[in-house]
Image 1 (cartoon, rainbow, N blue to C red):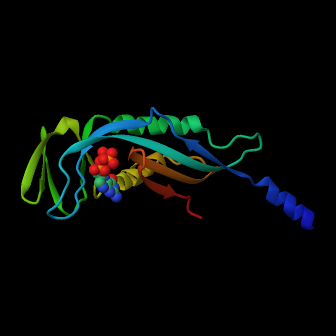
Image 2 (image 1 turned 90 degrees about the horizontal axis):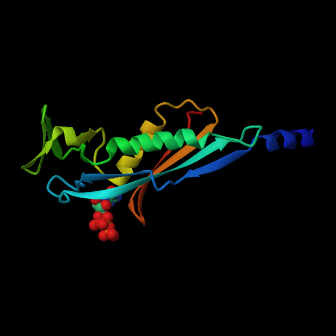
Image 3 (image 1 turned 90 degrees about the vertical axis):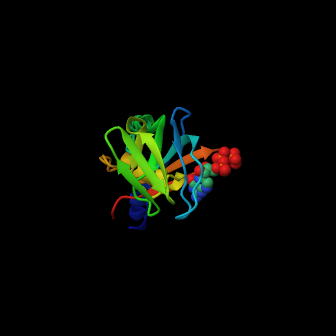
Length: 171
Ligand SMILES: Nc1nc2c(c(=O)[nH]1)N=C([C@H](O)[C@H](O)COP(=O)(O)OP(=O)(O)OP(=O)(O)O)CN2
């Protein structure tokens, strides 16, 4: 009986796949808002995105197909590349969305951005941790892989500066 139990347990193997490709990056302009009166000056970063997938091992020594996720991550990076990023949900900033211009007001100062070169994201602040949560949500929005048991997505502005967000399927 005990042997059977051990054999059944041994059949459920999981693996971790790391997707950390040089191509998974985007350049964007932003500013971090600290308080109602303090924010960074407008500047840019070369953001890089990496993902850790946890998945059940299939019978044939294969788990989640990392090529599927590589394509999705690349598409997400391409979508944000070379844009001004603004946070729609900041409590300290108001946005006025026009046809051709977007006006962002913080602490009484308004900056006008070209609408076609700006992306307004449904996040509170344009920080690595908020971007990680946003991109993770987009990555798993089309969740269709029952073998996935966890996903961690990291956004970095350079070596040593990374924010991460983690997802696990509902039990
Ligand atoms: N929790 C967070 N804190 C900060 C974030 C963030 O995303 N999450 N972001 C910033 C700035 O936007 C920026 O990334 C940091 O700028 P800074 O460190 O001054 O400059 P570099 O990125 O060029 O890093 P160096 O160490 O100077 O090379 C601030 N805080």
